[in-house]
Amino acid sequence: MEDRAAGAIMGALIGDALGLGCHWYYNLEELRKDYGPWISDYTTPRPERYHGGMKAGQLSQSGIILVMLLESVVEKGRYEEDDFTRRLDEELFTRIDGTPANGPGGYTSQSIREAYRRRVLQKKSWKETGGHADTTEAAERLMVLSARYAKKPHDVAMHVSSNCVLTQGDEAIVAMTTAYGCVLSLLISGEKLDSEISGKLMRLVRNGELPFHSVVKGDFLPPRPGDPDPPLAGKFSSPDALLTPGYAALAARDPGISIEPAWKVSQVYGMPCAIYHVLPAAYYLASRFSGDFESAVLHAINGGGQNMARAMLTGALAGAQVGLSGIPERFITGLENGRRLADLALELGRHAARA
Image (cartoon, rainbow, N blue to C red; front, side, top):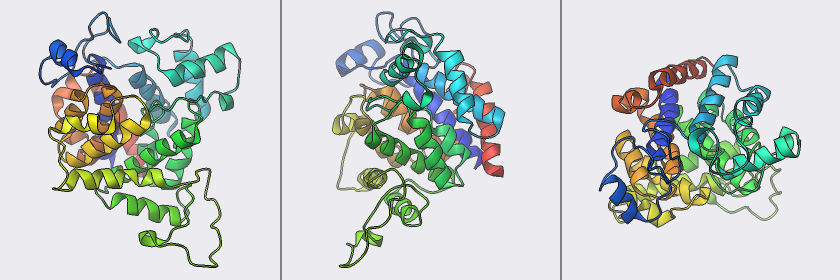
């Protein structure tokens, strides 16, 4: 579990840094012109594009925030929301101004800008900072929580959803983010990302361990006449977000479904930033290349568009399956402060294994 937890965290950080140079190319001809037919390593952003002025192997702001949460949980031994939000107040919000092309990492995403405006300019509490962005910013940091509480699915769901609403308040986005965190925790616990994963998640729903509402019985049998409406097991009205990974894994392994080359999954599910475009592609790639971290993240990167988020979420899922020991060493050594970050990730993994 220690190795898989560290693999999930480092997989996300590697995916983030791989996307830094070639981020948000929606014209794939331009991407190939600037970086060649196949991106296989960290790249330097062009001066006129997103993250201009940064260097290959550095983290974007999403990676920086992930590290802030990682440092907080390792230092405290558990997730303390007040400590994490203090770090955001002191270490991030003092360095941004609410505009996109500004701040650590060279760019500040929509949900972080909105949280900044509500927290700093409008003086709101952290219970009022979540905005309406339909993006993946919260999912890009939850790996720490999925790893730390991997043995306790209910705790994963509670901490992930609580952390998500700091920056994103739309219930559907929180549900999809929480579902991703639950999938990741199962992989860290040793489960496989295959067509059975959703069935395992639904059993946790029926056992009351995950806060989703469902009226169907096992194998999706309908309720019988006279069956009462089950009590809501939390804030999420539907468990459908838990079904996406199973369908994506089924597509990845069905010989009758062909996406070739695999990076074209971005064109199947969509290249934009919304979580409902990014998540299915990440599930697909991490299932298709379940034992091959490099192929998973590089196909995520070479699909263009919001490839940084796609690679972060894919990298975490793939890293959780192969473990830190299964990630090629060049991705660690090429990452700025890579060895220190790997040591932090392993320390978190030790906390998880002892829990």
